[in-house]
Length: 181
Image (cartoon, rainbow, N blue to C red; front, side, top):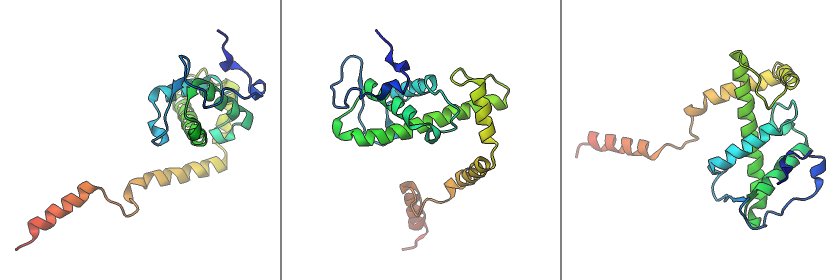
């Protein structure tokens, strides 16, 4: 069987199987009734492996990758998985979000390895990693990074007016116990 996963994005210009093609023994069916974080873990694991094997650039996030590379990644996804045709737009949006998270996690893992003196992972070349490290030290990247750290540290302090039902129940019990009839 020929491995067409390694096809160059410039050659992948032709349309692959439409999303409505029925599943067969080589295509796994996925459903999107829930948010993207509920995609089967096997799908995310396989997609993460494919993205690392076919990364091919010094992009520090998904949005930096060129459009032809993103199209190549999504074409592979469409060849590999089956989904209902009326969900195609939603699937493509979820694919972008999941791919962005998987790439971010892989790059964060490489940053941790670099800080601890570990080797460069096989999916990225030393030249690409040097270019990426230079981008990480740019002022604009550092400012965005600090802003995100502040936002993450304050995430648990405000729930936009909503409190969990358990807290409502705890307050109700306290009020009932302190009330004199």
